[in-house]
Image 1 (cartoon, one colour):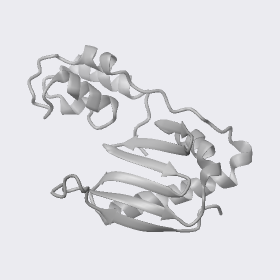
Image 2: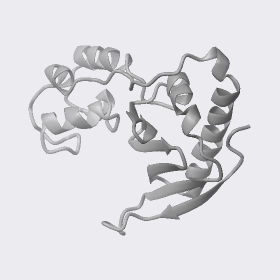
Image 3: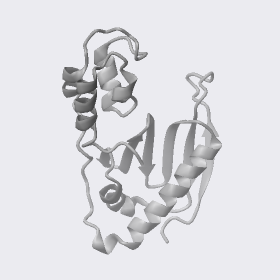
Image 4: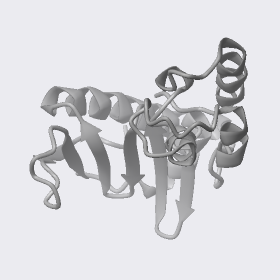
Length: 174
């Protein structure tokens, strides 16, 4: 077992303490830098940073970054959600470490959706029904995993299906 424990710190963002979501930093008891390329290979990290090593995951509007000595997460509902994600990551980290002999390490991030490919399938009305000021902003939010086809009310059934098909080739969920 590589990762035995951590100390969790939950806080509201200093830049906007009125936010309903919380952030979490888990300070790890062990340095897990060596497992990061294996974890990236197994989970398909959104981004891999080589120096210092870190794996970044994007899921459901959350950004989760695993560093050698800490794990950082944003946009969490509460302390319980942080505990659930940290327990899952601890299991994944230890499984990747134990199985590293049979895993090809990956030092690259996963392929990313292209904003302009998403934009091509949107109605381009800038109607704001999605909560964003323009279709371009909506496309950027969708590319980062924070929005989905279902968040665009004027999107027709055919383009909804095409957009969902395009996005399904990219990993966003943990």
